[in-house]
Every structure is written in C-alpha cells, then in structure tokens.
Amino acid sequence: MRTRKLLLTAVTALVAASASVYGLTMADAATYPNPGVVTGSTFAHDPTMIKRPTGGYLLGYTSPGIGLKTSADRTAFADAGKAFPNGTPWADAYTASDKNLWAPDISYVGGKYLMYYSASTFGSSKSAIFLAGSTTGAAGTWTNYGKVVESTATSGYNAIDPNLIVTSSGEWWLSFGSFWSGIKMVKLSSASGKRADSKIYSIAERFTNSKSIEAPVIVERNGYFYLFVAFDFCCKGASSTYRIMVGRSKSITGPYADRAGVAMTAGGGSEILASHDAVHGPGHPAVFRDGSQTVLAYHYYQANGDAKLGINLLGWDSSGWPYVY
Image (cartoon, rainbow, N blue to C red; front, side, top):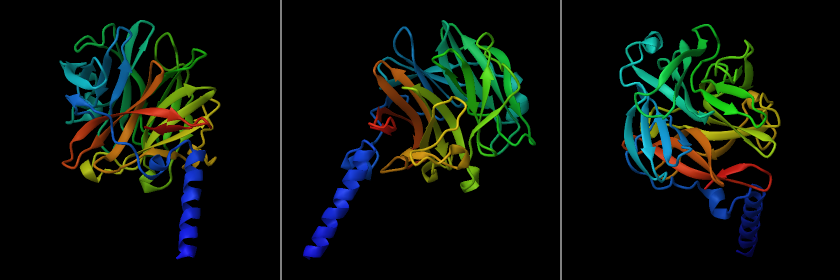
C-alpha cells in the first residue's frame, strides 16, 4: 500500500511538473475548457471574426454568398445577411451545384474591410481564392475584386482556407491550403491585395490520416509567427475529429516547428484544443486581438450534429506558447 501511495505521489508530481512547464494548471493538463457563452444566432462553420474599429464585432462564415453575423459584446450574435445576396456567378465554375463559398477571412486594413474567400467542392482541388472589399462590412456592400490564387486537379495543393497577415514590417502574406501537400503561402501586394510574385512557399504538411491539415491562421507576437491549423476531419457532425494545432517560427515563411521541435513540414504541431465533453471536432481557428486579449474563435459540433460558434481566449505560457482558457 505504501509503495502504491509513493508511486501515485510521484506520478502526480510528474504530471504537475509537466503541466507547469507548459504554463498549465493540473485541471488544464487533464481537460480542455468548454467554449464561452454564445447566444442568439449561434450557427457558424469556418468562422472568421474581427473587432470593428467603431466597436462591436463582425463575423463571416461558410454559406452561399458568405454569411455574416454581428455582435456588440462578443457573446450575443445576430444574423446580418450575406456579403453577396445576389449570388456569385464568378465562382460557379468551382462550386458546381453547391453554391457555398467557403472559409472567409475578414480583415480591416487601410480604412476598408477586406475578405478573402474560397470556392470549391468537397474532395476536389479544383479551387480558387477570391478577394472582396467593403467600406462598411454590411451585407450587399461587398465588391468582388477577382481571383487571387487558383489550383487545379493536378496542382498538388488546394487553394482554399485563406488567411491574410499584415506583418509588423508592413508585408502582406496569404496562407492557405487543405490536405494534398499541405499549407502554402504567397506574398501579396499591399496596393492590390493580389499576388506580388509567382513564388509559393510550403509551410506545413502531414503524412498521416489522409494528410489532413487545413485552415491556417498566422499571428505575430513577440518576435514569433504562430501558425495555427486544424488536423484531422471536419464536416462529420458529432463524429468529427477536428483539433487545433500550433507551431511557430522566427520567420513568416518558416520553418515552423512545434513545442518538441518537430517541423510542421514533417507533420509537427502541438495540440491546444480537441474534442471533449459535449464539444465535438473543434476546428477551423480564427485568432484576433481584442484590446489586451487574444481571442480564439472556431466551430464545433453538438451531439445532434449542428455546427456552433465557439469562442475562448488564448493565454501564453512562460515559454511563449499559447494555451486555451
């Protein structure tokens, strides 16, 4: 009995020490937090969210015409129509009979709302990323600026799930990608929002679970660029296995590596959120600053298969790695 007690004490101390290294409490090490309270119109798939310069929040999500929601307090959300209520015929060649436009990414840059979004069909790499702009962000006010990146059945990558980052030095970069050869990056012109050159960088790839990696978002903080992605499978309701991973780099173009030093181009990634309790397949992360807080938005599935908006905050441990709380 005494031996078992000593062993249990030693194991508990080891777990506590490991948790301390990663900036977590014992409870954090054992489980992930549930999403914060979200009320009103709570459906969202592949969400993007920003803080408006005038106050309140604007959210976009996968939908025909790109669905929009607004919130005054980051808790209660209301439907706000569609970015393109009259359809998007320029994307029809990529969406076939499915009119959904996927995974919008909204930013506010230079006095204007910009939105990168993708058009494709499930399981196909015949895809394209488009750019649109609006002075207000309101439904029906968005102007399509045209195609930014395109992929074909033979490209070896998939032009969906875009994310814009404007670095502290003023450079514009677009990351994107899903399955195939993983996450890519291109440099953009700050004047046009379109590609600055023809070079494509490879910044993350997986070699297991059908090479399932997608939904990149890059955040700059304290000399590092953090690459958040989703591993495994979405879109299966409560059977979804999506989970949120992260790596970081001193350079925007990589190499990105996880906590253990494994390169993200070699399948690396440190998990920060996965299925737990009644939260199934949390993924497609969006990360943005809100005052002194760093906000993580994502979608997850309820037991009945509905996709719901999840919102948490990110903390940063003593080694500069993010964790969800």
